[in-house]
Image (tube, rainbow, N blue to C red; front, top):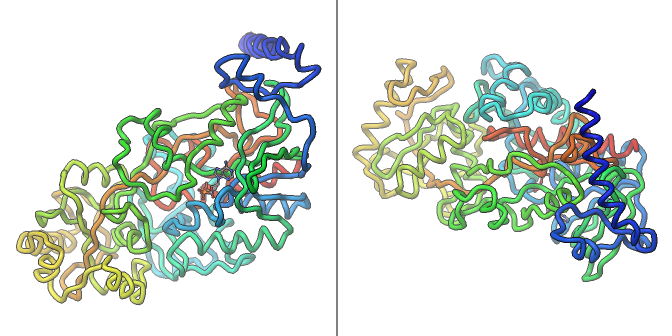
Length: 511
Ligand code: ADP
């Protein structure tokens, strides 16, 4: 009780500061700007005298989280507009690897394929272990529990099509990772967009949000400032604002501010719009942000450009079926079923770029691959094929004799059910690399996902620096922080974005 009182007092004191400015505010109301270095700067941000538009629910961002939020808010009968600063919809989501962790799906694929057990509880535990327990357990449980329903929703209402396989991604103790027939995130964004638009949501591209309006530390979000076709406009928010603006992997200064080890020279998998400014706008009106230093490298990006194309997902999807990682010296260097941070830093510590994933024809379909896709990858110079491992090593330019020895040893470990070198948990579903044709692909870490971001609660409400929900403000997806802890497990991002997007949209429409 006493604690509550002192919180109240400090909030009020701060508010008094705002009211101090409020003498002017009576004539020209000022926007709250906790980030303002001085009152003079705050004075440059007067609240708009009039609103150019008024909208029930505005969703900023058209990735997984924004589309899911818009679909639910529109489904609840609200007028919904999605604002997207880029000329195309989909953000990082549309180009992401399409891998989706869910302990079940409407076809019960894992069970049908005899791929062992899984449960919600097990998925929660893996996620929290993978994030070194920095995760908010309540939020983890919510996205894990909602993952299957969200997947089935996209299949049933959006026409999402799954590959009929389930894979085991690094850090997961079960085969629970699904993928779309397209092999990329578009396989979910198109269905989500279809659901959202069919329910009446409108999408405005080339529309950048440049500020969030709020008058004081207790009041609701009032509106937003946007830049559209070169013109500034102000939109009043009638019911709720959903921030679904993704992460800040493309903002080198912001990356450096929070984690200097993520140096500018490291490649990045993200689209150019992943710049995080909306996190700063939200902080300026009192929102709390957490765990901003936790920045993930994707271990298997294209080595020269950092692009995460469909071939770059094979190293992630293949490990549950026996794919191995090999250095230039023809040696393994990590337990291939390890989490992304371990796989990334194992490569960086080798100091020799790139490393390679090696797999064979028999693994392709099992690991959710597609022979046509592999042919296309060969044509583009991404995959390399050979009839023998010796020949493959030669084509890749690595120590082939050593690779042959290393892989024979690994085959033996699969037969023994034990990996004394790196402690990989061997499963009956792993295939030995005895039979060709064999394939190789180069890989190297690139900046991929920012685990930190805005603090939200179970209702996807944005929480302020005093622990109180900011009225009318919701957030979902990569813009939020605290769900994945220090390291997000591969294939957990999409269910997180979609489950919390749905929650944010539902609640934004209620206000
Ligand atoms: P998530 O996976 O969390 O849904 P994405 O990166 O897929 O995130 O999508 C976020 C979208 O938000 C991107 O398309 C990005 O261009 C958009 N976005 C980011 N900042 C702004 C902004 N200031 N105004 C409008 N759109 C924005």
